[in-house]
Image 1 (cartoon, rainbow, N blue to C red):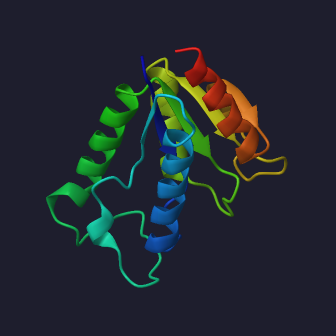
Image 2: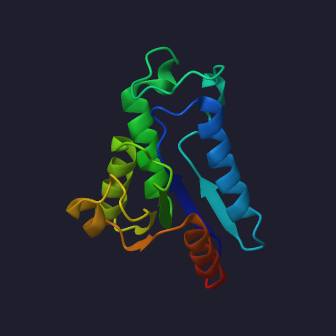
Length: 154
């Protein structure tokens, strides 16, 4: 039996290449660990949006029908629904990520196991975030190691 992990993290404000690179790197770390893990992330199917070093916007207006706010929200919710675990990494966030907080809320509402990376002093330290996350790690390495241990049990 495989473990399906939805990977979430800040997108708005980051350049597309860096954002896509982060999600692909995380996907490779999870799927390449030797366990049966399937990693999903919000940039799947959105590679065509790559533009030089432009910052990602919170509302995409020129990306076709798959990039409307409704399409992005519903697709990400669908991926969360079909996942066993939702892994949210806020380690590098320098401002509040509304999208990642929404993904955490959706995952919590759907009863998904939530694994959050949030260092001390994070701008995301809020009662709702703390209550919605099942496990909070200070570092990405600890969280990824934990996900591999979960996969070993599947």
